[in-house]
Length: 198
Image (cartoon, rainbow, N blue to C red):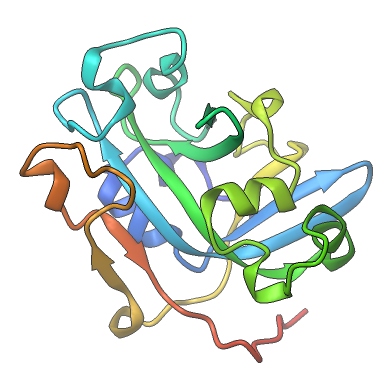
């Protein structure tokens, strides 16, 4: 079942934690690729000095101010796409960065997009998973709650609370405290030999 709009209309830290174990699904020309989310970071409003909205609304970050349950896809370092889920109330800029997934479907597609790389490294970073799943700026603003969307997030597997870890967010070294050390990165591990039950 696809996650509802109300799932995303909550505090961004709650959404980030509860996205662990959910199933990210990409549809391309009738083919599907999917994986369970195992790492996510939350970015919380204009006061969050690590957030794209820290300087207010811009053309680039406008999607963050929109409807919860939409994808916010942005380009960074001149080479990478990053996938985020918009959260919270309309007009409040908050989003969860999807940092890693555990692949469970569409191995041929991911292998083609990540040639010469072993399966465990296909999607273990935010730029890696967007490349593996062919997620680009064309999907910015797509409705993740729409059953016919080419990108959506579904219910997945239960992640035991005692396996969820937190840390400071990654790649924000120039961010001042207390934002630099906020424990807003959530992650877990799914065993390498895990097989999806269908």
